[in-house]
Length: 566
Image 1: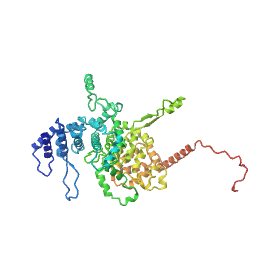
Image 2: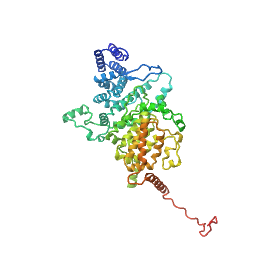
Image 3: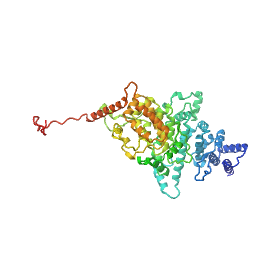
Image 4: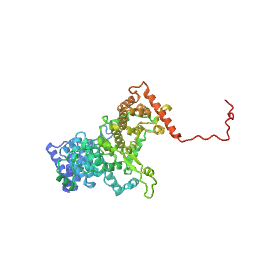
């Protein structure tokens, strides 16, 4: 108890108000050294108190604004972050975070690590320390930990907790803590994979052996005896060295795509759904205030299209795997990550054992394989009510467009352009000429079609379309035939963000210009001719096999016309 009280005193001394007189430099160093010793203590209560003190030091509540109308959000203590980074407090915090029990301070340690890794001044150094402490493997263990009860019961537990006015049950509290821990762990993985070393480290720990190219691995300068001892002791190699790998990325992706982990009874989930359907028609454009959108752009838009820093302090954790989208976007910057997403997964149809095959041809038919990919399973997330999911998947699609060898497959098999353009399509009424050759999914919803409200998502989507257009002439002809210009034109007419509008203008220039060696206006003519030719071929395919009815035997060929008109 005495030691716990000392840790509390350290917390109170370190989280003094900025306006009050600060202690001398020597006293401050002593306080931070004592805090570091408490983080490394053997007693769980001391470590928990020290983790709480670290978090309280990093996040200090600012005083209310001058007008006293509302309070400003929590601000980070830059001095505390720099001193804790200098003392390498990340390593003991990782050790505390690895303990899943909240009684040992795991949540406070995870929160403190998320603040440090997303800090503007010391974030990169903290990520390096985090990787040195094998933080990626620790966070993967938390992200893939078992929930308190089977996931099939998560919805009923959340609904029961929402309907109960009294204190929530123990199971509901356990689910709440588990979601919070997983949310922090995924946010830390997103921050760590922003760097190339972190992305490679994540790939080495989570991808199968065949997904790791040899050029990303360093030779381990160890003898065979040392390697054998390491295998016996279950000790892995360095972050870039040879190691045993498991497809945990596939497991993490499956949990990301499983909606059962999301608490749909949470008020935050209801607000996210409402924000997606806030503007449902063109009538709302007259009442639309562009200043509100500009404020949202300043908060969420990143003009340099860099991976976002995840600081989940104070956010809702109804969706524990929401930050996995940012992890996927970050690893898709590497060739290995894109190969993992674009690799075809073949699933064969198994025939029953009692069924007797009559011929080889029938056996081949029964063993037909269906091919899909992880990227195709991610496309529906572009319409998710969760903003983090939409931003991460939009960035993932953009990064996958850098794989020039896969452009034909992305356009003709995955049909990525349709998924991207659906986010830019709005409730505008189209003319008959604009509908010619255009996929009906863009306009069938009419006034109920909602354009993507987040400017960063629109920016990523427009960049992805621009990469598709710049990939080659055949891709541009395909997109012209699919009338991409109609959607881009209407989206640009109501676009408020200047940078997104500039990207749309570049797309228009690719679509409207004539190709080299062609006459003026040939691009539109070729698009219409190709659409008409495809329409005739599809009609011919539908009518193939139809036979004309024979002439009735009661009819006489010599009989006059029924209308007596030559």
